[in-house]
Length: 392
Image 1 (cartoon, one colour):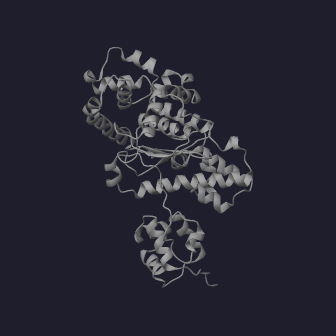
Image 2 (cartoon, rainbow, N blue to C red):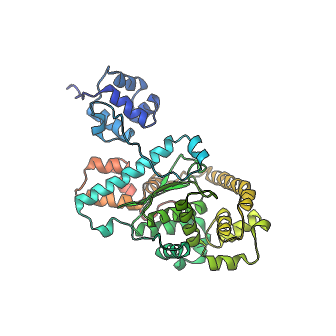
Image 3 (spheres, rainbow, N blue to C red):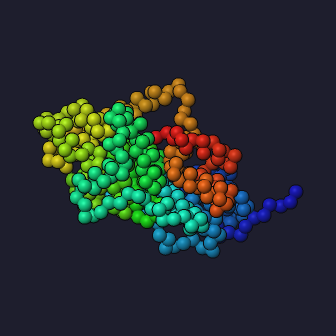
């Protein structure tokens, strides 16, 4: 039997790539499909990896293969980051491993599309979002522009009242505007509701897959406001001391979802000091929004205070916890969600379509398409088959 070809690598580079990916040796070994002792041997310089093993390591560590062949670890590597609009206590207290991986993944999806566009010479109209908001616009006008771009007024009220259907329609329309919408897993909603890569070509909006549909709708609009303003951000709504940009995106999202004249008409004489959670949820539901979003809109319009919000906040959190319990109960005894539907939801339909298009035009290799779409080659058809009905 011919001996396997092994590559000369610096063991310190392998250790650096693993640790910067936030993985311990046991987890890395499990994902690569080897014993933990093998990872230790590679990092100790006792055994050299094969080219196949090195490619597996690169995929698991979310690095290009060339990075594992560097002569030494990068000491001054610029870590992926976004403007962080979360509260200070969140930034200090959150274990960011899964969040960092989600940001890295989104940035690499964006970079892959940019490289494909260069290869295929795609026109600018196919690379930039059609949505554009001006800093000179007041938030009401910007919210109206976002609402018009998504054609919310053309959606039947019955759709807006069904959270899953409303979210699905808004995601589809955001994709038609040239935005890749993805979802991330294993990040608590208390740590992150969403983030956006809104600058330059191929903007990306990320929603927290663990959030409930009403929450995702509001997050989507908030992050689309970032895209329209050609800005990026890591977001954790909403607080009285938010930076100006974050407050502006909040106000635009709220205005788009709950236009002031109609919203105030719906409120009538209602004010925050007399508001119950059930009443807030009923108001929000009329606009496809959560009760929490309705209270925040009332604050924007001077009909409630932050004291009202914090008074109701524990009940909103309990309502979310109850929603999660009910979802879990409904799923017991049923088939789990279809894997490829969830994969399409998390990668984004627009991204999958563009990668498959590039593969069909020989702009990327079979290995590239498998790596980017994270499924075996013989399962590409299953993934492509979900694009017309992606679970949200």
